[in-house]
Length: 322
Image (cartoon, rainbow, N blue to C red; front, side, top):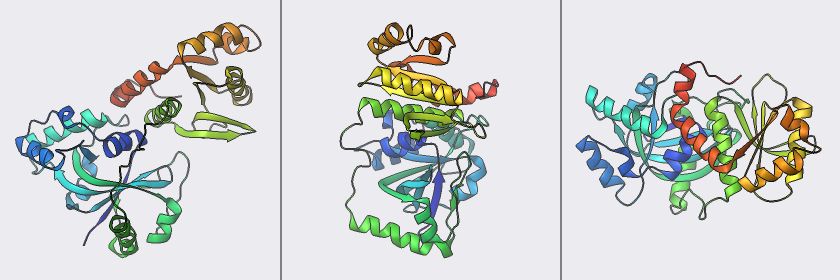
């Protein structure tokens, strides 16, 4: 019987290795048998894969080709895929080391324990499904409940007695719709790209991230929460176009209301305008108190790349979010 494996993960990891995929050459595979399979399955595109830690080796080892992997993030299951094959093929040191090297290249290490996801599932036929957690519970009979800042789903195989309706649901998706790319037909605009990176950074560091957060008549591009703290710890405005003064006033409200740390991300010209026109005038307190940090767009991109790979090392040195 086909199985369904639930795979929760950071959005940055899902985006990178499930949605976008990895160019085969970036993996620098040394195992010739693995390289042969990768070339066979992914000769015309990028490699899509997922990984599990050693603690979940038992779950991983029971998976088989064509089983479903249902990915979970932030209250919904956005994507599903089918398994192509597993790696390591055998329980030998050389293959485990090869898998570990690949996992570190793709996802880095988990900042909580310095380990990576060495038990690999190479996947194919990724579909966007966007199943809300409530719908999943209705289909399966589970009673998972989404709570901010707390793990809702762990990596498990859906029990056989609960999987029947879910399998029917997933089979219907694959049978009635032609395969479509899971990425948007056109790239997201610059504003959305930067917002997405900030959202992912918050998750990587250990905050609870929210996009388009509304409160008291204001909407903020991204906020980072640190429960049980009241109000967001960090508030971000990504300013590409529009009224710069309005963006700064929104940030000031967040600082006045919750003493949030503020971040304005924009182009160099816009940041210079903020310094000379606004932060020396009516909003001078934001600059004088150090409440506001000005960041260029490329700095966010560079920081995102760095944190994705080395957050685990910072945690090992005790550099944790406060």
